[in-house]
Image (cartoon, one colour):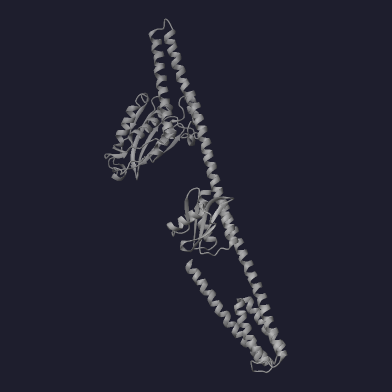
Length: 504
C-alpha cells in the first residue's frame, strides 16, 4: 500500500511537471500564431485570457499565475506600443495592460474555485460510495462478534488505509488490520476511549477518534495515514459505534436468555426431581406401612415387600446421585485428575461396578487386534486419563443400555487409540432410539418415547456424560438403527506421557 502511494505521488508530480511544460509551450505557440496573423491587442488579450482560464482549470492557481505572467510579457512585448519592448507608451497601453492583468487574476481565481469545487464534489461522491460500501458490508454480517473483528480490515480495504486499529471498551480488546499494534498505540487508544480527548495523534503516525454512543464511550478507532476528512471520520465513527452497540446489545441479550434458560432449567430440575423422588418414596412408604400394619402376612409376601423397598431405595439413591452430579457440573467444580491406567482395566471395573444392572444381559469386552500398529491400538501401555470420571460415563451408558434393552440382549464394550484420541464404545443390539429422539438425547431432562414407555429415568444421565467429557476435553456421539441397536462412542485426548499440569 505504501509503495502504491509512493508511485501515485510520483505520477502526480510527473503530471505537474508536464502541465508546466505544456503551458509554457502553448504560450509560445499562441504568441507566434498571433504575431503571424497580425492580431491586434484586443484579440491577443482574449486569446491569452483563454489560456489562463484553461491553466487554472487544469492545474490550479500556481500554473495560472505563471501562464498569466508569460502572457503579460508577450502581450506587452508584441501587442502594446512601443512594440518589441517591455515599456508602455501611454495611458491607453497602461489601461489595457492593467485590465488584462485584473481579468487574468479574476478569471483565474474563479476558474480555480470552480475546479476546487468540482474536486470536492468528486471527493464527496467517492466518500459517499465508500460509506455506502461499508454500511452494506456491515449489514451482510449476521454475526455481531465476527463483524467486530472484521471491521478494521473492512475499513482499511474500503478507504485504502495502511492500517486500522479498533479498541472495544466493554471487552477491553483490540482488533487490528495489521500486526503493527504496539503497546504505546494500545495505551493511547485505551486512554482516548476513557478520556476527554475526542481525537488524538497516536505513535506511528496513527490518527484516532473516540467512538461515542450518545454520551457513552464504546471504544476508539485509529488509522494511518491521516487521509479521511472530518465528515468521513464522523460518519465512519458513527457507523462503527452503532455496530459495537449492536454487538453489545446482542451479547447482553444472549446473557439474559442464558440466565432465563438457566432459571427455567433450575425450575425444571426441581420439578423433575420432586416428581422422581416422590415415586420411589411412595413405594417405599406403602411397602413399609404394609409390613408394619398387616397381620397374617406370609413370608413370601414379606420378601416381596422387602424387595420393593430395596429396589426403590436403590432407585432413590441413583436419582440423588444424578442430582448431585448435575449440581457439581453446573457449579463448575468438576476437577480432572489424570493418572496412568490401562483402558481395558477401566472397562473391567465399569462392568464389575454395574454387575447388578447387567445381571440379565450378555456383556462382552472386545479385544483389540495385537498386530495393529502401535500408533493406533497398542493398549498394553497405560495412558493418562481420569478413571473416576470416565468410569462414571461408562456406568451411565451401561445402566442405560441395561434399562432400555430386553433381558438377554448383548452389550459390547471396546476401546482403541485413534490418532490423538482415546476412544471408547458401548454398543447394544436392543430396539434402538427413534430418529426423532436421537438429536435430543443429550439435552437435560429430555426423555424420548421409549423412556416414557419404560417409565424410569430423570433425563439427566446422558446430559451428565456429555458435560463430564467436555470437562475432560472430549465429546460423545450416538448412532442408532431402530430395531437393530444403539452405539455410543466417546473420546478424550490421548496422553501417553505424564502431563506437566493437571487440567482443571
